[in-house]
Amino acid sequence: MIRAAAVAWLILLVAAPLLVVFAIAFAIPDPGLPPFRLPIENGRWVAGNEAWRVLTGDGFYLTALGRSLVVSGGTAAICLGLAYPMALGILRAAPRWRPMLLALVVLPMSAGFVLRMAAWMGLLRDSGPINRALLALGLTDAPVWLLYSDAGLMLGMVHSYLPFALLPLLAALAARDRAPEEASADLGAGPWTVFRTVTLPASAGAAVAAALLVFIPAAGEFVIPEILGSPGSLLVGRAIWQEFSVTRDWPLAAAASTALLAVLLPPLLWWQRLR
Image (cartoon, rainbow, N blue to C red; front, side, top):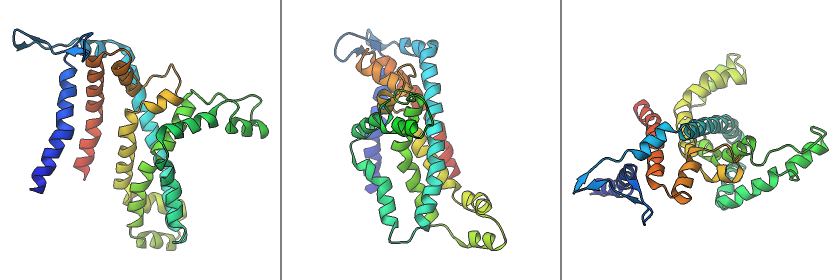
């Protein structure tokens, strides 16, 4: 009974919407409401490939997709690099401090997403605290262009997705067996050697899961690029949003969404096979 309910839930909320998006990807743009019509003539389905021709023939969308994968991959790598020392630091802290340290990581997620991005706009602007600190320390002679730049985009992405990398790692490292690490240290291995040869291999599965938890949603992110990113550096999530809401070309937006899903499915299937 429970299994049947779970399957029905997945069909209703996952499979059915995906099939609708896939069908729209083969529709034809139309000025009506909704802004597309299915390619049906004389009661027969005539495959409409106009959106796919635009998607594959216009280098704009392929470039946006490639750039999205680079940005999401970089975000996942940076989050993973920061999550390891943060998780190990939290676990090595006194037990009474651990809940507070974990709360400091998770607490920003309770604030509104747009509000957090607006805060980053204030921090990154030319007259913001970051540029004032750089000028006061003599590290630059003029304000550094941070807002609406790739650097600002990456800062916003890492800030938003870091908890998704930290929490799986924290759970895995908390449950690990410390005996091999202690034995390696007793045999003369340094902290970096212990981490590289013992801790990292033991938590590799959690690290892959953490990276995927960041990479997959970051690949389709459109709010952060819209608020903090450069106007000329269009990511695929932002392109899809513009096609849906601005140009109202739903078939092209659905085709781009389907292509993005097709790119993101192989890492998930690979992870399932590893498990």
